[in-house]
Image (cartoon, rainbow, N blue to C red):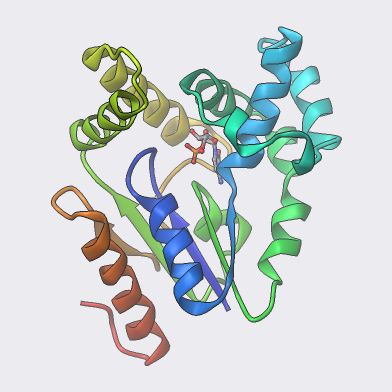
Length: 211
Ligand code: C5P
């Protein structure tokens, strides 16, 4: 079984995907880490403006080379969304995601194009969203929690810029698949949001229309 979770940054999709995977005993892939790895590779070589460098990094992608802790910064996120708009970068990362999608007994994959491009045949598709202001608020809390000094307006502007890039690129733009269920977490804490996702999976499995 494949559960596809798509949505914008800080919508809660990563935590929901992780907890769904734990709940069902499925494997979890955060596909954003792949694009972040390529983004970090081009940042390290100073070639963010060179699509050939991004394509080469994607073609030789090795997850072991990019520990998750190195991929969390906003600079890497921004670089990820720039390289993610290059069709050959996306192409190079497809096989890995398709292999993962075949995991038994099931896979939960989160990203931007899982329900639309990577696994259009996924049994369950959930599109997780929240307003840009609420997503910025969460991100600000997270950064403050790490002791970082935060410019609130800059965080909101970064979130909006990334949404804009991810939704308006010609290839695999961020959008809700026609058969995805919308889960708006603007007014939901993480536990009720996870429960809502479990309810959606259960409804789909039982052949009911999710509420
Ligand atoms: O999900 P995360 O914020 O880690 O993703 C970082 C960036 O990687 C996104 O802003 C997006 O541009 C890109 N991405 C993508 N397709 C995916 C996952 C992430 O284009 N399936």
